[in-house]
Length: 258
Image 1 (cartoon, rainbow, N blue to C red):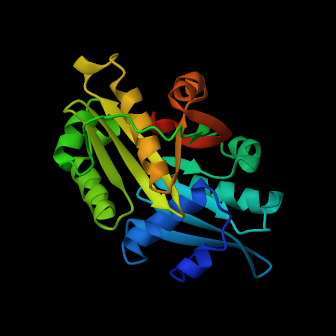
Image 2: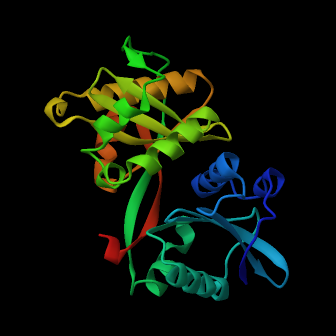
């Protein structure tokens, strides 16, 4: 059984498995709680026992299970029906359920593989002039030509990013006036890097590579594990920077949103 719930707490979420999907769910709850109509939480239960939690933030769905719990085929069938009914643009979940959920939702979703990377520090921060508190409009100016979804939703992006930055859940970095990267969440000692972009006329000059390495070293020095996700064909690129592949998952993306 899957049902919407506002009975969400930090204590409850601490019982979820320590993975990216849990940290995403925790970051949404830490940022907004349960009082906004663009964020919903659902419990996954079977025989009165909670197996997992789902968050739906705008058009993105996250699914995670509690420690020592797993979804059987019956529950996966219910999850597939839930996904097809709610029609989120993207669904992220634990890799062990990839094949089954992809098969059950293939009429409306395609699976897109990602590699997860973890930064391996050398304890050597290069002397880059990085702005750690940039104006978000400057960040947006760089990201807009790189990410059409951000370009087409300026107000939503600005509101959400500034909200998370103020709460210490996110941070943007700016190298010169041409390259940027944003920490999408800082949860449980893990910082997830995302939305890396360089203005078109400065691409190919290794600015993003330099900034990512600097961020990895700086945040490691500050006591965080640094992670990012990318397509599998980018493994060698990120390994050259100092990241090590540590897992592969599958994101379900709604076909009509291509």
